[in-house]
Structure formats: structure tokens, C-alpha cells
Image 1: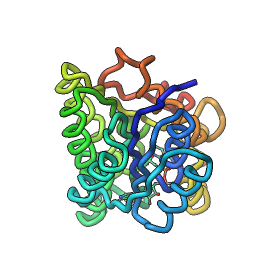
Image 2: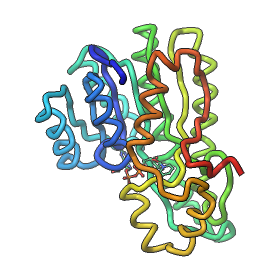
Image 3: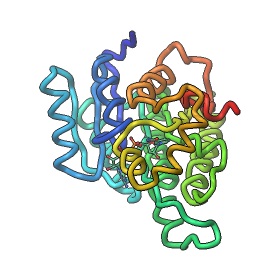
Image 4: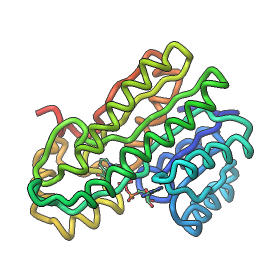
Length: 252
Ligand code: NAD
């Protein structure tokens, strides 16, 4: 459906869940893919899967909380494949539910260092490369938690609301220069992040599922589909949106 032959994509948090599904989808659409994540073993395994299937892929160890590592991931993409056309800034972590009155500064900072400052750092260095090229498309990973508030999730929801702010500001700044920046806001998606919560927070998860009108969890591939569309020529007039892909969760 998508044709990204000759283009280069970078995905952060690419060794699991939605990041991995999106890296696979980019590769199947013909793009060369750089898979950035924390563990060397995990990124090598994911990249190997793609190269074994005949795609161009490179695994890069990258902790997005360290700006220098985010910059290096972009540099590695350009060194390996010559340019950077698309990026999915997806690396993120959850936090245990915490009463807002009991939240620690350490927990707030830990979540925001990955989910918000990590997206900021990756986006900054991707924009530098895309600015030099005069083209590109970036998709940042927010959440339904970037659009609404659920109890006991202040740190996570602050980070995901922040991602939408980063996205909108960069989007209006860079649209005139041929670079589109958008965000995707997944609902509750069946990934390793959520399967842990299904067990440890079964009641809260059942409540969330009740509010998901479609009546099931989303699949990582359904987020990948939205990310590829946002990067594709079909979305050429789509700038600065925070696109819910959530089975209807945020519509009521
Ligand atoms: P996941 O845990 O399966 O994958 C996240 C990946 O990010 C992991 O491979 C992890 O190693 C990586 N990562 C974590 N910290 C990192 C860091 N500092 N630097 C680089 N990589 C790092 O989770 P997922 O469900 O696929 O989540 C992907 C994104 O989607 C996250 O930003 C998450 O907040 C967001 N999200 C998830 C859901 C959901 O229901 N699963 C819903 C809305 C938003």
C-alpha cells in the first residue's frame, strides 16, 4: 500500500511493541530502517529479522534520555543510508499508578525524561537533518493520555500532553520548510507494556477497556498503519495533528 523505496526511516523504542511493528511496516514498504532502542541484543535481533527478510535495516543502541545518543542515532542513519526522511519517536515508559498527592519528583522526572525530553531530543536532531534536506516527516508518540486525564497517572499524562505541545510547535515552525510533524495518540494497545498492566492492574484495565467502544485492545500494527499514513504523500496536507487511534476511547 505504501511505497517508501529509496527513503530512510528512524524508529525509537523499535525493539518492542508499536515501535517494532512500525519498523517492520516501514521495511515492508521499501524504506531502509534504523531501529534504536536500549538493549544491544534486542536491537540486533530486530534488525536481523528485517535484513533476513531482504530489507535494509540497522540496529542502534540509543537511550533517548541522553541527547548525545539521540543525535548519534540520526548520524548513524545518515552515515548508513545517506539521508533521513521519516521518524517515529516512540520510545516511552509507563509508571505505576500513583495518587497525585503522593507522586515523587524522581518518578515524575524519570517518566518525563523518556517520554517528553526523549521525544524532544530525537525530534531536534531529526529536524536538523531534515532542515538540511528540505524535506521529511516526523510522527511523535503521544497517547490517549495526551488528550484526556485518567486518575493516578499525572506524570505519564503530563509527558504525553507535552508531546503534543512539542509536535504542534515544531509543526507550524517547519511546515513552511517542507517538513511535516504530527503525533499519534494510541488507545490501549496489546503490547508488552500493557500485558504487564493487564495482570498487575486488572481492575483499572477492565475499566479502561469498558471505555474503548470498539470492545477490544488495539494491535501494534494498527498504530504502525497510522504512522505510515502520516508519513506518506497521502497525508501531505496533514500538519500538527494529534491523531487518536484508540477504538473510540477519546470520543466520549
Ligand atoms: P513497549 O514497552 O512494548 O516498547 C517500548 C520500547 O521503548 C521498548 O523496547 C523499550 O526498551 C524502549 N525504551 C524505553 N525507554 C527507552 C529509552 N530511554 N531510550 C530508548 N528506548 C527506550 O511499549 P509500547 O506499548 O509499544 O509503547 C510504545 C509507545 O507507545 C510508548 O511511548 C508508550 O507510552 C506509547 N503508548 C502505549 C500505549 C499502549 O497501550 N501500549 C498506549 C498509548 C501510548
